[in-house]
Length: 454
Image (spheres, helix red, strand yellow):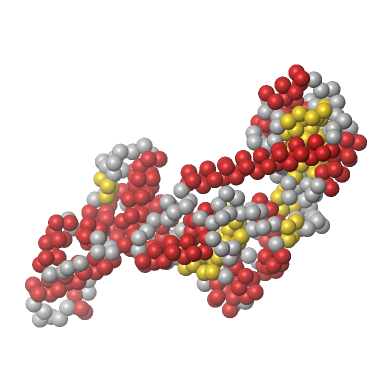
């Protein structure tokens, strides 16, 4: 539902416009002077401003200039009973959407308003699409060629075109939001908004207001009407991150909204209908949360029509090499650095670490290394101490018989290490060599020695 601010120091015009626009299904806010109007421009989610040209205090022309400083794209329609060509030209030069003289014709005004709102919607959609393409949300930020990631790509392609709710689960830092964005930007809703909200970052009261919006005066500090995330996502996708952290009372309200796609703002009485696709995510086992009574089973079934499980980084080690190179390129460009690579010792540390923080931890460590390094070759001295993994010595007494022949035992261990490295790296020899800290040529020599064919 579009919201229009009406600014006029004559009460009769405010009342007439409010009734006319209300009958057309628009939500209206009124202001009797430009100062009050500017407060609404700053705080309310507006789609259009209609203002009189001549008012006591700040004029409509000044209001136009100031509002454009705050929200440059917000359309403003100017009205005056003292219209001249010069005033119209001046208003258009200052980026007014249009100029209408009083007394206005209802149909003419309604048509102008409709065009202004359609234009504003296109401007917002183009900006969102441009930002999305710039951030490469379609697939560019999802890195991986492992079998588990190939399955996820296939799932994204299958579910993107449907309206079904999707629940994405996995440990923190595995890239759940990237997958949600890939679903959205490969769907028919790609030109409409993708809106996200972290359900675990806000209190119950604040989360309700963020989700459904609030009316002016709904609570202390609610000085202006504010649209919620459901309203902002109308026609597009709403991503509920960490949905398992939502309180039971709010779960009930969310369930009703999902059933009806209708809600009231906090402090409001008027129902608002929306068309929103829901994607959700959690780092918890949601079935376990349901069994514990911490999450409603009926809401779970609504959200979990399709389930995507994102594996932790330690289960897709063949993707580590791609991720490292991706992050090096990313931060090399950001920091304006020259070509960089990792030393064999650094690669060995990277491959041997268990990555409890997953991709997010890996990205942070690579960014740190790019910042600290000055030679162009990232070594273990550029990596944080806590990932160096000072492992205990092999328990030779336990695993190797006392009378085991030395050479045969060493060769057996060496062959097993090479086969394991190849399996972990998807048979990419250069990656496998880096994993165990030797050169590619030496690795290939060992493969021939042990008759390893891939």
